[in-house]
Length: 307
Length: 319
Image 1: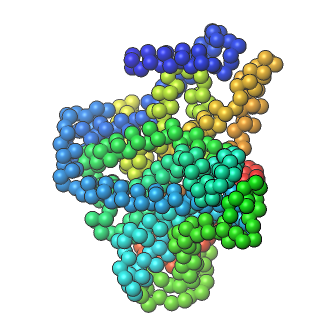
Image 2: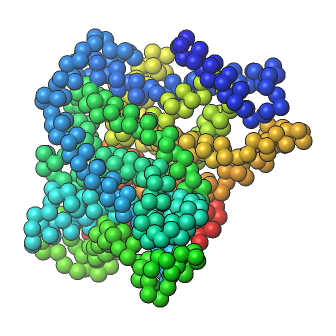
């Protein structure tokens, strides 16, 4: 904690020097000092509360036995659950499946949505307004309420033509299709904020529409593309409702299906193995997310402000 | 082609020759929308008019509006109305509660973190974003552990203080409170980050001038901060409400279809409309009746969203 607070003070002094909101008063009045202290204590309290469940997972993953620690820290430390999960469960298969399904979904979402958003932002065509309104309406309906129909279609096709149950194609199509409405709105709002002059100068230089899109617009859209990819990947990795209806083959399970089986599948939850799997599964992901988020948040806000 | 349109903004005036050009950009999205949304919607409507269920998987036939009749009937054996009304009531409370809690919590923390004099604000921000960063499928199970009646951390603390061991996930009232509060834990970082970036776009001069003019902290908040973030928040409110209205994944994963209620088959006290629908399809293969429920949810969400859009003035600037 001591190190943290010394780093904090450095941070603060740096920011104050760079330009506080109230440039007229660099030195704090006593009442302001008191307000800052209250804010800081509140923030510390909220942060500790927020981190508690995450801390709990890590602590449980190190606890001996298969139940969680009675106190806050493990009664006896062990790393055996990590080895257990790797050796005795399909953990690596889940990770592989998730990387594949999530990766394909994310890439498809980005490529389909950027084209649609660009068209809605830059072209004027008959039906454009209706298209936007239809997307706005469609994004209100998540895939979960059509689950009967998904089951019916998968069942009918498998019964009459070819086996599609346990096939990832249908699953990916549902993920991509349901992500289009909201993300198109977000992305269109973002492209709307990009100045038109940049493209125009490309046209004057003789570039075709597609070249201008590829060389001028795409590079500017990277934050938004990152956001949509990460969100698409995350939604796929977290989905249980749709995948568990379409996928039944254990060798095709994704990460969240495997994890929910630990927790919801039976009465004897193996908490320590779950926690070890959770830590291994989330550490690489959280690092990627934290690095990427600084970058995509600006784009996200740009799109959201435009609505 | 490009040279001829170079001087005019080509986006506004597609020439006759290129009339179909804009639509070509929409083809991939249309294909996915057809497979991912349109076909499921059509089949949902179709199934809702049949008797397709566990005992009629292959020999189902058209029954007209019978499933809708069951949905609006209070008959103790075939009617669903009573259960649906409870589900709808709780769904509305859940969606409203979550929207308010999430946006207020996210907004409040954004305001606190936005204070440039706060020591360690970047660290706070990095830590507070973790509920968003750690995959939901992991943290929701962790919450089930933390809330466990016999061994959970919360009850360990409460019982050591002599406050007993509340049955968080099995008490019909407590589970509802838990769902809204824990949902706040999952959702506030998204709103904190969004609102923070909107706050940072407000010109500092505005506050400075207001303070020189003698505006207090509350007046500055009321007359500068709120009007500045309002346009960005309005669409978020509408979208968030519709999202939480159908947030079956969260409700089912946290409460696990518990505790059971006694009115209609399979309804849990924690269930919202969509999680009830999902559990009935998954566990009872009650396809046709749930197809009818899906159509009803569809109509409800659309109606509520239209009202919300009117109320908040979101999406006014569709252009």
